[in-house]
Structure formats: structure tokens, C-alpha cells
Amino acid sequence: MSAGNLRLGINIDHVATVRNSRGGAVPDPVRAAKLAIAAGADGITAHLREDRRHMRDDDMRRLKAEIDKPLNMEMAATPEMVDIALSLAPHACCLVPEKREERTTEGGLNVLSAGPFLAEAVTRLGAAGIRVSLFVEPDPRVLDAAKALGAPVVELHTGAYCDATGAARAAEMERIRAAAAHAGAIGLECHAGHGLAFDTVGPVAALPQIRELNIGHFLIGEAIFTGLAAAIAEMRRLMDEARG
Ligand code: PXP
Image (cartoon, rainbow, N blue to C red):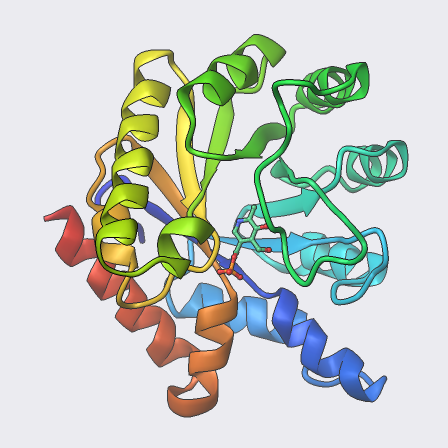
């Protein structure tokens, strides 16, 4: 059940982070995905990183087989990942930049000077019926480039907005607002995510062009205190409230 026309995708990567810290089978990210769906998630997002630091190939296969909501696979635009995505056939792929040394996805895709492989990845995944989104900075020039590559969807990186405070946060929010308006004007479906928490979700959820939010780390952390279902329900309530 989405908030108006705003979907909530729950990113479960960090359930796998906790599991991998002990090398065993628990906590199981697929169990978390099912719980998130029961708590109101419209879809599940999972990032299969090149170094498999959290989600693993078998997790992706189990998610695809066992959940009854759309699976959004985050991935780098590499030949290995495109082949995995084509054989997994998730509902959606979100193409993200990836550096081994980073702790999380630190910036948007460099769409402006992307090599030919990015365009090829967008084309091959799209031709297989997978909805392709590009994770980008909230910058109109980047959105124009994403459109030119043939991607139907962009996900605006909200990390800088979430990390900032005071006037700097307001300025970052204005970049997101302008980018969402531009995405709508040029016919791109617009999503947003990264770093969103209870205190930052409202202004982003209020933007009418935003159709999907993908939220993970904060909710998995909050689950320690309130449980995952309660954390997701509160996020949903705040999205509904902001959407009016
Ligand atoms: N969207 C994208 C494209 C991401 O890479 C991530 C992080 O994996 C998220 C959303 C979720 O970010 P967070 O875990 O900070 O909520």
C-alpha cells in the first residue's frame, strides 16, 4: 500500500552486513524482506556489490524466488553485474557507481562522461524488460544526459541533503526540488534515496514528481530499538503526512 502515488522500497543490505559479521546464516535478509513487505514496503531493494560485502548472489536468487513484491537490484554497470541481472531478471535495476574503498555509494553516476558500456547496460537491461534507473546527483545537466542514454528512471542521491545541516541542508533540498521538477519536465520517472531518516524524509516525500523512495540503513538501525515493522510503519506515516 503506497502513500498516494509514492512507493517505499526497503533496502535490506545491512541485515546481510550484520549476518556477514559472524559468517553464519543469521539474521537472514530474506526474512527481513518478507517482514518489510508485511509492514507495508512496496518493494525490496538490494545492492549486489562487486566485493559481496553484504548481499550475496544466493541472497539475490532467494529474494527473487521468495518475495511477492518488486525486487530492485542495485548494481554497478559492469559486464559481470549485467550478466547476473539478465539471468536473475529482477523487476528493476538501479545502476550505481561503485568503488571498493568506499563505505557506501558516495556520489551519483558519472553520466556526463560515461563510457559506452553504461549506454549498453541501459539498453540490454531495458530490452530484457527490466526497469532501469540511474542513481544520479540532483543536477539538471546530469538528468538530460540520463535521458539521452535512454534510461526511463532516475534516482536522485539525497546523501548530501541528509548530511547537511541548517542553510546548507535547505540549499541541498532546493537542488533536489529543482532536479525533480526537471526530471518530470523531460519525462523521467523520479525516485530518491540515500541517507533518508525520519527527520529528512518529509520534504523529499512532499515533491509531487517523486514516485519512489529507497531507504535502508536508517531503518535497519532503528529496528534495533523499535523493531523493523514499527520503523517502517513510522516512515510510511511520515511519507503519507508529507504527501498530504
Ligand atoms: N538508493 C541507492 C541507489 C543506494 O545506493 C542506497 C544505498 O545502498 C540507498 C538508496 C539506500 O540508502 P540508505 O541505506 O542510506 O537508506
